[in-house]
Length: 102
Image (cartoon, rainbow, N blue to C red):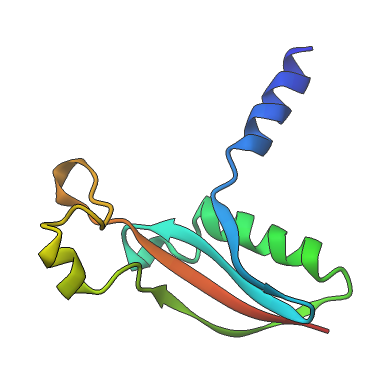
């Protein structure tokens, strides 16, 4: 019973989402704070799992990189209320993987 609970909770803790989806591909994204963690993060692993599910016959990564959440000018106008900043002043950003299914 405990094993089922742990598996269920870890499935709910997915760190990636499909931010854009088409019939032939899309863009999966996950949050990051340092670019050095984008290749080894759980979020990237979850994003690749979403892409694998969407493209069971394989895929190609077309482009990847940071995705802006909001323009800095808009954020300044709203006095920083829109961007996500964690304790210690660390800004959370999105990393996107644009893919095309084979």
